[in-house]
Image 1 (cartoon, helix red, strand yellow):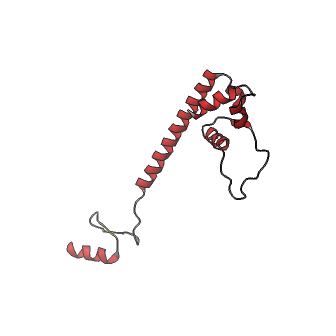
Image 2 (cartoon, helix red, strand yellow):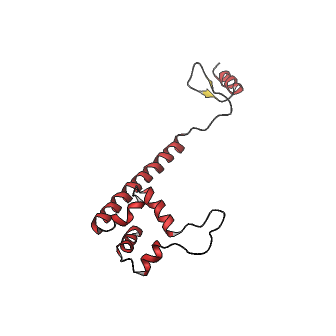
Image 3 (cartoon, one colour):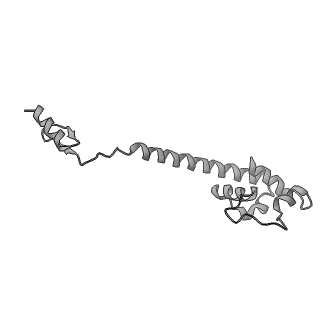
Amino acid sequence: MITRWVCHIMRMPDSRIPKQVFLGQLAMGKRLQCRPVLRYKDALKVNMKQCNIDPSALSSDTQDRSAWRTLCHAAVSQFEDSRVEALEHKRAVQKGVQPRSNLSAWPRDNCSRVCSSRIGLHAHQQTHR
């Protein structure tokens, strides 16, 4: 939805105030020395890069409305698919991790039981005698 609004602004004539404000730069003033607060235009560029849309070609790509909508829909759906896939992979990795035991495991020779300590193995062997 946001990219459709940007397309609308970019197709406006250069004399329109919304386009001048969107593309304009401040003549006076300074930004903060630490990490500056992002402008709308900066956040838009980050989002476009995440969706594999070239921000430098914004003015030429937006002139054809139907091609721009098709490009945006395809890019956003591809981004969403990759984002969901990454989250599912992350969750699978988290779920697949086994809790670590304090010491090495002590397997029992005659049965399938694995004891977590040597004294536990000794006590278990006592039950099989």
